[in-house]
Amino acid sequence: MHKPDNKGSVEGWQFRRCRCGFVIALSPRRKLYWLRAKTSIKEIRSKEELQAALAKPCRIYDRIARSAAAG
Ligand SMILES: [Zn+2]
Image 1: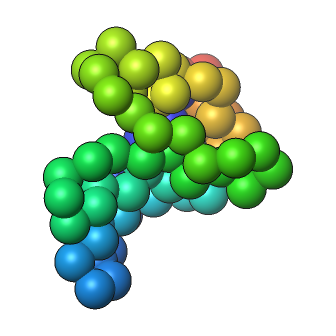
Image 2: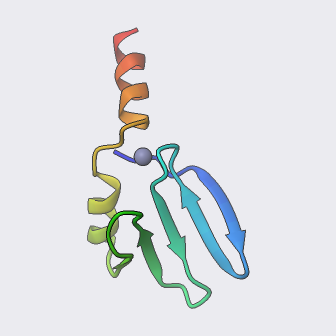
């Protein structure tokens, strides 16, 4: 699961980035996009689609969460 905690903004766009590079972008017109490096950008049209995107395995955060649980 991704944790996009790092916030930034560029020219009216707002970005939230997970440590792994997963990025959700909010456009000036309040549309949400999932910026994917290897495939096309995906528009997120519902809360369910956002939850599905966030629930994808995260190669950084999941490892941190696992080691925190173990230690
Ligand atoms: Zn992530």
